[in-house]
Length: 129
Image 1 (cartoon, rainbow, N blue to C red):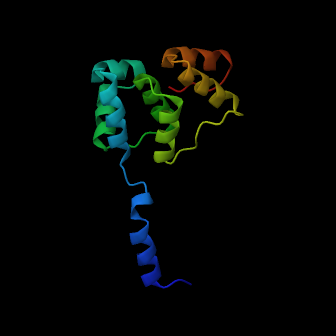
Image 2: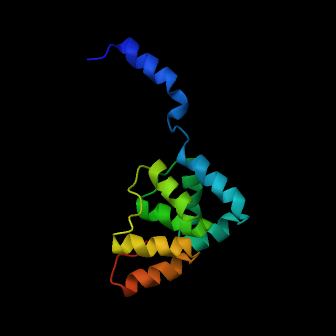
């Protein structure tokens, strides 16, 4: 069993490797690159402006589906979406899962949330919202 001194030493040596950036800061960084208003983002995400405000302020923590809705609203890349999912400690999108594969396709081809939800519904899969 390691002593507390060894753990403290390990933590201090590896401090820069830990992911301590709050989710809302990463979302804010992505949001500022879009040039969208919060109202437009809410509409494109299928989420209320109040919920988005709470999300961006850190008062709310999104479910996997809600976070993916925001990713579509932001026009996020696959890499950005996967990074946000990891940061939120949600399962990443998996290409061998039919539903996730459709979502990945939509992200990589800049489809809208509404187009993806329509395709998911057509395939008899759970929609994002």
